[in-house]
Length: 189
Image 1 (cartoon, rainbow, N blue to C red):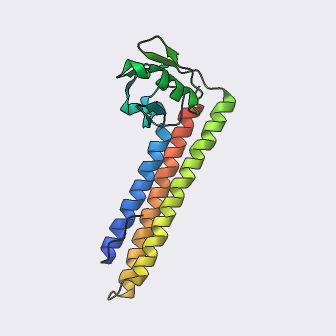
Image 2 (tube, rainbow, N blue to C red; image 1 turned 120 degrees about the vertical axis):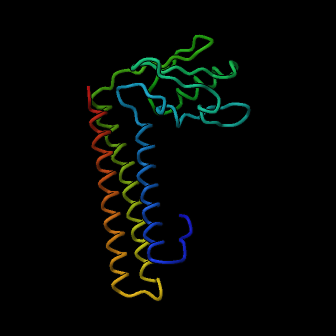
Image 3 (cartoon, one colour; image 1 turned 180 degrees about the vertical axis):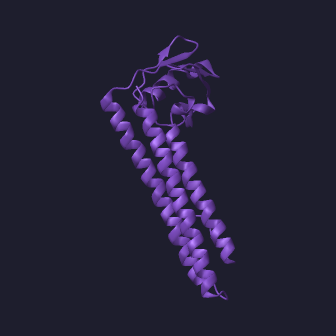
């Protein structure tokens, strides 16, 4: 958590909104890494590769592209990393099988089974719950700050609390909408 701005009720409300915005963005970023039936470069965002003696994100050692709806390609900048990239993709929990032609790695995106779709929906719900918890935490944190703010009338405090609650509710709705959209995308055959 970033330190709170000591200050006015308006500062507290703004800070709460920023924290909640970050939580919603984080949920959407995590959703992008969850596989659907379509190829998307974000699928490989969390893949780590053993390169130059370090673990590095795949995107720092290769170009990832989605030339077709059911195919991803990975072009390492250094050809000596082909095996390491292939190993990193296999080690990820994505269930993808890379094909290495000595120059380029092709990753066909297989159609999802019904069982796998349901598992992915559970993963999406877990990410969403983490986001909701972060939003609630920002609200609770801000409510406590508002109560501790000195030299303000109780009417102003109540108004600020209502504002934070309204922002909280809007952000929870945004997470729920993102969940519905991602769920529909995953279940789409």
